Length: 419
Image (cartoon, rainbow, N blue to C red; front, top):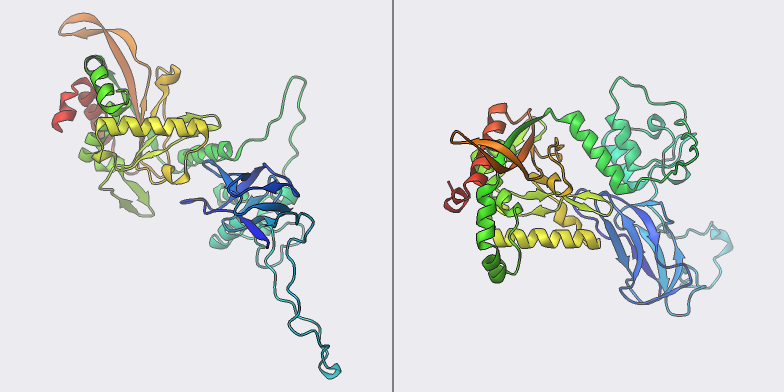
């Protein structure tokens, strides 16, 4: 009995994936739950495991193909059935010939295509059929294949990225009538490497943030002395009790939670002509992985203690390094913290993570001479940066928010007393 290898549900806001790499070939035997193929989404790489034991009879979606949830990637047959057809037709119920007077062409039941679902309607001349996710987006935005032209997917098919690029163009700009210019030839010493789907998505979302949000950044600096002293005093007993090291990230998460409660616009988002205020804090924590930056989310961070925050962030880091982060762990963030200081950054301007309206940038702790009570002292200082969407957050709110974060870090007792 044949078993289809299907594209799994990909998670919130992920409507398609690219076949990155087949781990097995047609004709190879596989065991139940053995990894067969890797799919690359806009956020993470997903492994598809064998739904049954047997032999891979056929592969329907080649590497590089864009597929939608539920699409058939291939077929697994019973052991030893490597040469069997992918879709055996059922035998006719009645073998008797039809009467001559009623002779009509034989009508077969429609068959579901083995690859990506076909787009309704024939493609216009000179173009290729859009991929499923692209077709859905085109229908929602009243865009035709003729407007977009030849796509960048395999065989010139239109991908979701092609549609997004088209929609991002200025309204007055005409659609290109000809194929895009061929990529330039590499010079000696150059190497051309195709961007991963994750890197393409990062590039698109960062540019989208710049194009759609009225993004501004305000800066401040924080004296880390009190937080460092508290961490040093309780580091050993904290680790012994909770089984996790006490880091600075939990201090900043708690400080941001307190500030977001006071300035809810920084935790809100714009939806059309409305503002959606959130009575919870889903804190995104930017984590650098082998394939780029991802932002897993601390759900209900406003209800977490220091130990739970540190454990959850530590688990995120491990799963990112091992490539095991789940799509649902990156969905629904309302505010983000990014720490360029772990790479040595002294100051930077973080870019918003749409549709969020605020992101806090932490940086390297640097000893600097500071005037304290009329005397010059060497203090461990950190620059903080808050980028915000000025369409929803006023300058006064943004500056006040960052001051509250600074005050909480410089006097951690405020966090304990919720003041």
